[in-house]
Image (cartoon, rainbow, N blue to C red; front, side, top):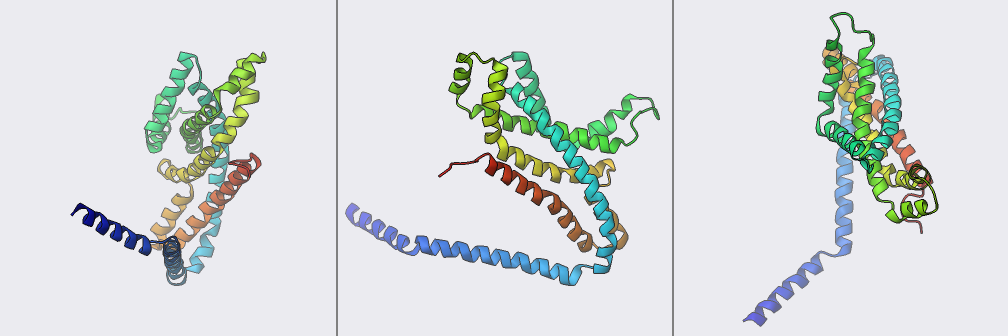
Length: 275
């Protein structure tokens, strides 16, 4: 009886193996991919042909260009500051000094553990309340809030990426550098960090793309970014699809070149295994 069951199960397995072959799985994947692509292209074509008011679209392009420039300024400044600060946060996370390590860890845990929206409210509403009414010295506080909040938030993520990159470098390299008489700072700067940067580059680049998309939250602090323009046009024209097209184009105009830049830097750093 046991031998019969074994043969039966073996026959069923062989039948399944005959149905699920590499070739069939490949073509099933191709079919699903093509069907999904056709569905997306069809939906986009339907929207562009039936729901977009091209007269309105061309009329509001200048407003989106202005929002694009404003967002790009915030992104460039915040990205540079976040990456720079993140390197120091990452160094603090691997520091052997307990105080430095504890402060860096607390920083990362707070800014990764609370929503960016919450951090925006703290900076935008909380800090001005420390001054008497009407005496807050900063005029364009929404722009300053955007830069400060995005920098502080993303420096925590960059710091974790840098920490992972440093930890991925074999410990023997630091020991070898120190045995040659190099100081800890020189060893880190000349030996460890260049390799850590290559290890962390993909994660850092991905975080900068997320930073671009996080600018959509700035609408809650009255910063005239891309989605703010969308909301205003939709409220006045009761036409969501026309400005939505420009929202997509505007964000992609930032994120696609950024992703291409990251890929270029990865290639220059000889990312991955070389043949």
